[in-house]
Amino acid sequence: MSRRIIIVTAVHAPSARFLPDAYASLRAQELPEGWEWRWLIQEDGRTDEVAPHVPDDARISFRQGRPGGPGVARTMAMARADGEYVRILDADDRLTPGALARDLAALESDPELGWATSRALDLLPDGSTVAFPGDPDDGPIERGAVLDHWSAHDYRAQVHPATLFVRRELLVALGGWMALPASEDTGLLLALNSVARGWFSSEAGLLYRKWEGQVTGQASHTDAAERDARMAVVEARARALGRFQWRYPPGTD
Image (cartoon, rainbow, N blue to C red; front, side, top):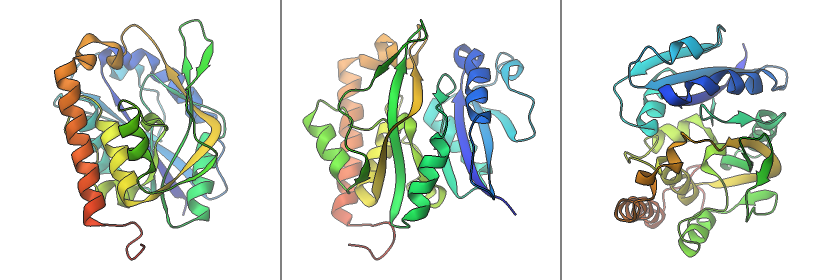
């Protein structure tokens, strides 16, 4: 029986047109023998605008639900996640060749690693790419390192939460994504880093699309009062987990 990597994608109507590009990047992935992927697409809402863009593939599961933001959509998709690992793939982004295999190799080779991330490149409207600044060295990321960097650099992590590859059991134990209007993926990343060592691949694993309808590009995303509130909750959770000394795997120091 094949072992599975679950790809989780939250989508809303404006980003649905990019799903075929995401699908093409997923089909291009080559996995080790005995491994397969399943793609869980969860619409943040119930419209008639997303389904026409969902590819026809038996490996894809599409559901809809009450609107609550991408974190809610992803967490609801976890109800049908039956694999050992979960990889985030936003609807408007694309995986690079070999991305899944590299993340899988890192976590399969070291059972004490709970999660992995990789280098991300901004994908501009003209098709060109721009590197994400401040990438760490290729290799393990110690507990607390992402939080320390994030706190010292105006709430900017040195690894991109949109590239997250994580053990499903650990993701479920932390409750999935935070109940925030934005930055829910950063909140999850910092929580993971508080309890488990991670891995960073310096080889690009994601093309992070920049476009006019991007949620993170909207004025509401940068509202100062809301941003400060989001960051306060994200930091409080991560630091509380650190103080409680809950560790993955259980029994590690």
